[in-house]
Amino acid sequence: MMSTTGRESIEAGRAVLEAAASGASAEQLTECGDQLLGVTRFLVDQPRLRRALSDPARTADDREGLIRGLIAGQVGETAADVVAALVRGRWGTPSELADGTEQLAVSALLLAAAKDGSLANVEDELFRFGRLVDGDAELGAALGATGTDPKGRASLIENLLDGKAEPVTVKLATAAAYGIGGRSFHASLAHLVEAAAAARDEAVAYVTVAKPLDEAGERQLAAKLSLVYGRHVALKVTVDPAIVGGIRVQVGSELWDGTVSRRLDEARQALAGR
Image (tube, rainbow, N blue to C red; front, side, top):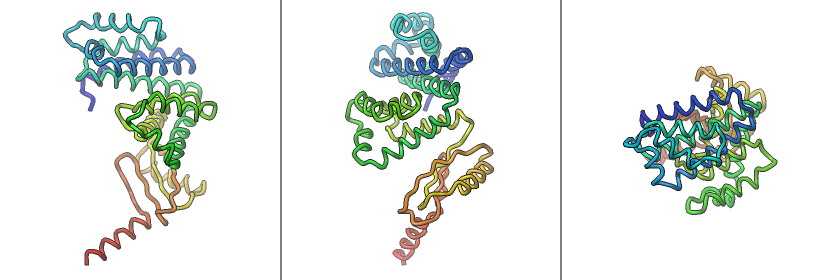
């Protein structure tokens, strides 16, 4: 869990990013996000540097001077200013600095999608790509493998999505190959779907049904869930005949399981207990 000082440092960096975003184009924000992801990977690969940049014994000016000297000419002004704001902050652990940089990289990319009106597409494309991976055992094994080079997994994702998805979708999906915040690839994609929904002030409901819902059914379910949660709820529907019938809905940590398969399992357990 991120420390209080770490969260405060991220907010300082976010303020710099959002101030710059107001006058930036979607392309500039996409480039900034991509550059911040590059800085994240650099920090992850350099533990001694992370320690130096988060060392409270060094002055904020010293830490800023160190990182600016290292990234000069490698990233644009906005990315450099965001990173400088981050290293001037206080961190509970050196790894929090890399996590904070990654969080703001994702934020920059989502701001880019919001700027060009593609945020809803990005959210949907990330979800559908996750379902595609889940439905292909070979692809799922390749992208879910933790002992392989993440650069190879990222390259595979880029080849699969390039020209078929929004540019921000491609960059976020490739970032998931490295593990967002230390998550697995699959968990990273789910986190990014929810981050994109949150950027649209939405919650995400993962819905599993035995047969596809029609448009009216989806609208009705979304309206009911939106009423329950007090905000717009975006449905992410998966069709799974194995549940036989009924519906399963998960929103955050809350799960409502009204599937026939669950009721059958409960009946079997009850009979076995006699």
